[in-house]
Image (cartoon, rainbow, N blue to C red; front, side, top):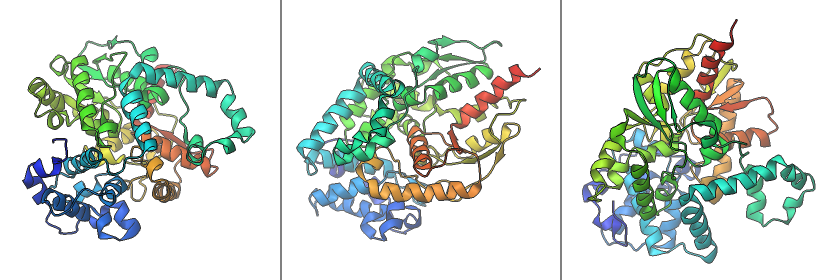
Length: 437
């Protein structure tokens, strides 16, 4: 992948030629389902990209808006019989939109500079902001703010987003996990665990649970206390230069040759992390290391099944569970059966399948911020299918999906259904083994 005005024109043309226009992607595409317009389908978008690569069309504001109307859910890649590399096309097209500047505005530029390049490239600053937000929430400031309905004073966009702010954990990952932890039994494998950004602040308990299940399966676990963002957010928003820089920082921090596997527990991050080899293919210094990294990168569910994880002998507290598949876990990483295998291995868990488990929930990174109306319709559709199962717990393995579903349940007045990561349920079952008389 290249960046610059000619990124689509300069990329391997065979990638653009892969699409046979067969239409198999159409019924799997949430935005096409919403509008029934060809340009809102993967096939239509690839035709637009090819027109730009062929010099038949200029990069315009309409093209930019179309590229950002796409969820990037990658459901089309699962349905595509020709194996079109849509992720590469998608990221190259968005990079070209940003390079051409057709969507620029002072407000948009300020948000991208402060959030993408400012906040999400500085893990210590991100934790500082997270700590301030935790103080705001834990001190009762947020509750008072809401009771007094002071959110009416916020600009319209912030007023809409304020209820969706994640609850920040009291302790972050580095406060819960030691840099190196060893199992009680003899070590059989050596792994590194990635803690993420939002995951680190709002779901550090999931990172702790991930380490616990690895220890229970005789893995020595290395968790660097300060980790950079994986760059997924940047690559998906057309900033490939920053995504590459963040990938280099990850490779400097964790040497893949030192570990049997590098573990991700967030579907969206993992989908990006396992493609560092493509991202850095032209980087003379890092290309070989990036290839080794991609070969070692595993989603936690995938890895546990791969090593024949030990089934717990005690039950988890959840009884009826339904599973929502993160788009980037099932379509991006092709990890679909493994989370179910883990849930079904927990004694006492009844797994109830929900309709359209692989259909996007509308979170899609920051899609619920940039396209709130379409996101809300997808969220409502998802919540309806989840409710129809009657399950008391929704299991999902991506922080964006977790927040989108939890916020939807809360907004609908559902105070009984919980949202959990499958690994948390497994960790609780392992923990229950020690508490039994």
